[in-house]
Figure 1 (cartoon, helix red, strand yellow):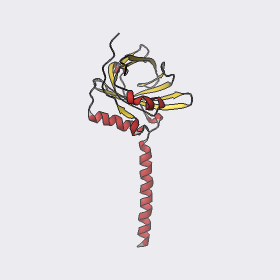
Figure 2 (cartoon, one colour):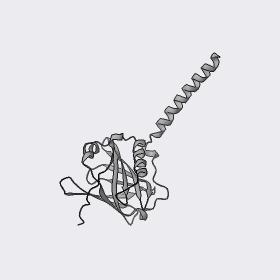
Figure 3 (spheres, helix red, strand yellow):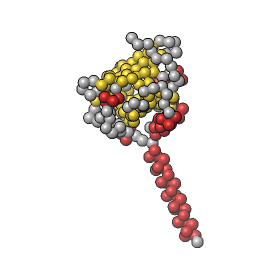
Figure 4 (cartoon, helix red, strand yellow):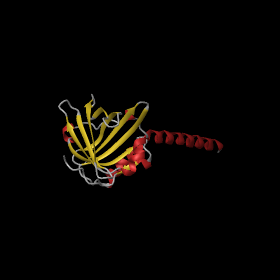
Length: 194
């Protein structure tokens, strides 16, 4: 009967609305991204390899083709912050190094710092960490009127499973990064130690 047709059309319209809400809910805002529960700063310390990076920042989009793996050293400070140092070899064989001091916040696993290199203010969160294997970080950055997200995938070794790489890819998509701006970095030699 016609009334059941109207009923099913309304149900379909409701289903379409619901699907739209679900799809929109897959995109998350920065306030919804929380650090890993029971974050352990001491276990996070040490050497990591930068395996993947994704961002909607203009500087990243223009430089991503030339990026390679690098090494990051995380050192806890006495007051609960972290010293972050990163190094990578450039295409001409020189070593590029960056260091930042990130201050702890009231939330374990959440830190803030001003980039010494780029000048932006970063809200950094340790989102998903298995301390002997991988770390997934999210940072929401501001510089003047510009805001951008940078997500990073770190590994204790240069080789991470396809499942972890896909987990990183999905996380990037959820934080509104375009697929073409998700990069698993080609392996590179490490910078020589000082």
